Image (tube, rainbow, N blue to C red):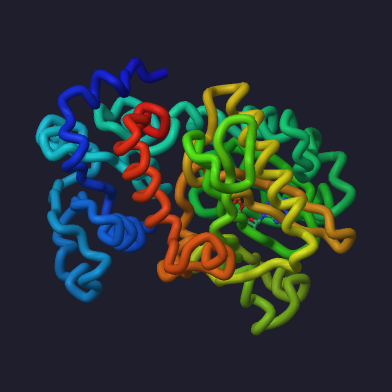
Length: 355
Ligand code: AMP
C-alpha cells in the first residue's frame, strides 16, 4: 500500500493555479473539455505524437502536452509535473498503461481514493465489498461440474472482456477453457445491461444525502461489445458455435440509454449502499464510479462489476445527459470532477478528495 501523503504533496502547490492532467486516451477529451469549462489549465500526457489528432477537437485539446516514450516514464516526470501544480485524473487506460503498482506509487495528487484499487482489482475482494453492501451479484460457480445453466467464464486480468466465453454445459466449458489461466465462472444473467455512472462527493451535501456528503447519478450507458452485440446478423449463436465461431465481449463503444423511472430509487439505494460500505472498509470510493448491472425480467438488478473511476461510458454525455441536465445544464462527468476540485480547493478540502 502506498505511503504517499496527500497533505505533504499539496504543501508546495499553488492552489489558485492548478492544472488538470490525464493520459491522452479513454475519456481525456471529456476531462479536458470539462476542466476548460471550469477555468482550469490542462495538460495531456501522450506516448508518441498525438497532438495532430487533438487539433481536430479544439475544445477537448489540452493546453499543453507532455510527450513520453513509454507510460512508465511518467514516474520520472513527477517533479516537473508537481511544479505545474498538476492534479491527475485517473481513468481505466491510465491505470492499465502505468500498471497498478506504479499507479499506487505515483507521487502526484490524484483524484479519488487510490486504496479502492485493491478492492476492485481482485474479484473475490470486490465481491466482499459489494455483497457486504447488500448488493445482489451473479452467482459464482465454484466447481465447473455444477454448471447447470448458462455461465460466463472470465479470465483474471483480461482487459475489456477479451477471451471471456459463454458455456451452457460442463462439456462445453471443458472444450473451451484454457486451464493455464485463472478464471471465475459466473451465472450468465439474462436481462438488459445498464452501466450506471455515479458521482460521490464526501464534501458537498447538495444531492442525495449520505452519512457523509452526497451522491449523484450523472448518466448511464450500454456498452457496445464485439462480436456478441451484432453476431446475430450472421446467424444464431448456437448455429455459429457449431461452426466454431464464438462470440466475444470486446468493448468498442458506448450507447446512451435511460432507464424506466420507477427503477431510479433502487439505483440510488444501490449507490448509497456501495458508498457507505466503502467508507467503512477503506475511506470511501470518492468521485466517479460505475456499477455494471443487468436488470432481469423480474426488474431485479444484478451487479457484475464496479469501476471506481470515470468510465468511457460517460463519453456520450460531454454536453450533459438526461439525468445531469436536471442537476445543471451542460454537466459531463469530466466537468463534475473539475467542479469538485474547484470547490475543494476554495474550501481548503483538497485532501478529502485526492490521494
Ligand atoms: P466485465 O469484464 O465483468 O465487465 O464483463 C464484460 C462483459 O461481459 C460485460 O460488459 C457484459 O456484457 C458481459 N457480462 C459480464 N458478466 C456478466 C454476467 N454475469 N451475465 C451476463 N453478462 C455478463
